[in-house]
Length: 110
Image (cartoon, rainbow, N blue to C red; front, side, top):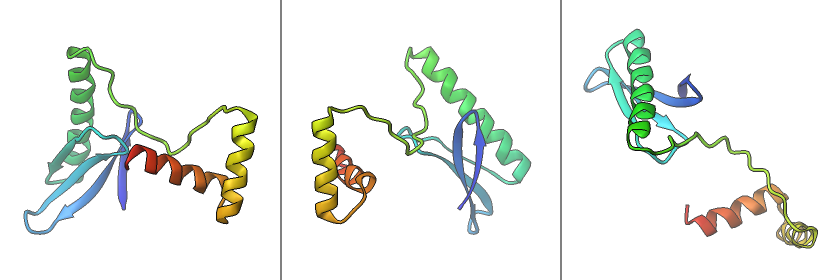
């Protein structure tokens, strides 16, 4: 998948053959930001305008703009919990990262 980045936000780049437009959607946030254009320069400009408007609208509403998720999560836990998690991951035959991802996904209903 092709992507474009601006101010820490990343958007997909897809061509809609039927409508003959380039369609983008901001990735790695739950807020929905979509946009489209008919050329690459216009697409980049509209993407920048969409992000700037999102940040401006959040400020107007006294909300914090959602930051893109990097996929990296640092946790500090009790050593007993850490040891138990390592044991469960090993019992399941997966890495601690994969085990934790599975547990977090289930807990977050994602």
